Image (cartoon, rainbow, N blue to C red; front, side, top):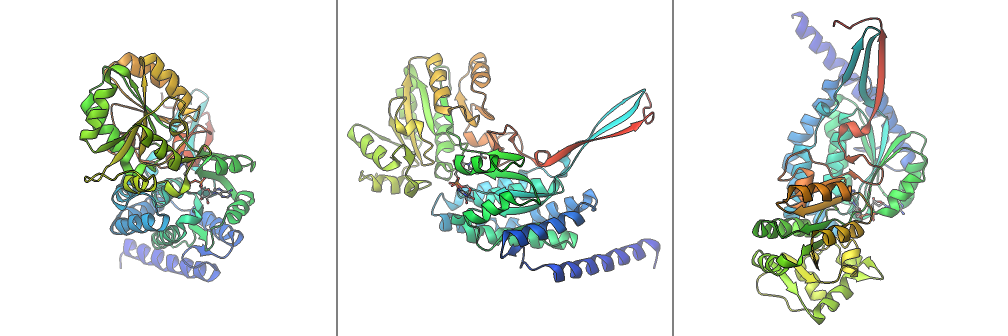
Length: 463
Ligand code: NAD
């Protein structure tokens, strides 16, 4: 046996011994524990061992996730749609694939160095510890895949608080990730959760001293709860993305992009077009073109019927969130066309509840405005300072630039469907955690890492 073979053998034996010791100390099964306290303690022990591993160990987990989860994505998409009763399995599969294939790994953690007569300064990204990650019901599996890759790449372990409404599929996925991480590292409990992920469990998690960082992906209530915890929070909150179309836009392309974006997963993504603000000279043409691409226009008194079922007391009717256009038409007691519609559109005023409320339904209110200035003014009101997402179709570069600068959204998509802003059919990496109120924007591994400075005095400058 040569030296290299001997080294491999010793490594294998050590890894097996560590693994079996870890199994014995673990009370959770496949990362699922009875209480948040037990789960967080186990994840903290896992972090302490993971912290000593080389970067290639982190890469090994991510490579294994990318290859081993691929064949399960369709099942996860189907179970996610059926358990939550929201969205559709085809689009959920696309979202799962984007999360798995296009979330950056350790390459996101770039090191920078300063050198001079006084020596050398290194700035490096290092882990926080155990991250408490709250996932929404609207994107359950894609958020867990995306956050797992980002957070494990940054060297953390993770306690997940999945949405109770997506409990079964989330627990199944977290267990799969924990198994993959264990097989790649010999460390158990790098990804954990509890068997009953209740709101109370989330509250306990947020108060737990061993949670080093909170990453909260959800509506305003849960993000606010995290912000009150006293911990550092990466808060990915609600949005209400307006889409502006001016008279210079390529109307055919705009119509197709808007339908694709606003109908994607029945409008569940927080980045999806939630209202359309169109300069009056092209409004009719755009709406006609959208109908050619599969939209159905609701008019007259039928708009009142549609509004009455979609928005109740100023809030989205939870029973219709993420439902298909046919279900929404049926609930509103409106006729169902022979050709299955992809999106419902209705012309309304700028202050209509359909415009102001984040509906998360394939219902797109259309507002006709005098000119670009009026469109931008209304878009600012509709976005409500959430700093989330806006979309604009125009060939006028100055206007595109001015709108992006004025709206100050974390994502601004020019001449494309909204999902191009999260790396689906557009340039850039994918994320399903867009940190809006706290300002980190489209998150990746470096968002979940601490920036640290390491100084060597009087050395290592070779200039
Ligand atoms: P939600 O706020 O109902 O739930 C989000 C998570 O918070 C869930 O895990 C839920 O269990 C938990 N939660 C909610 N209220 C809680 C409470 N009082 N105590 C403890 N835990 C609580 O959101 P949802 O309906 O699942 O998701 C839709 C919302 O999330 C939309 O507003 C959408 O815009 C937003 N969202 C934002 C992003 C982003 O990246 N910015 C991504 C996805 C969804």
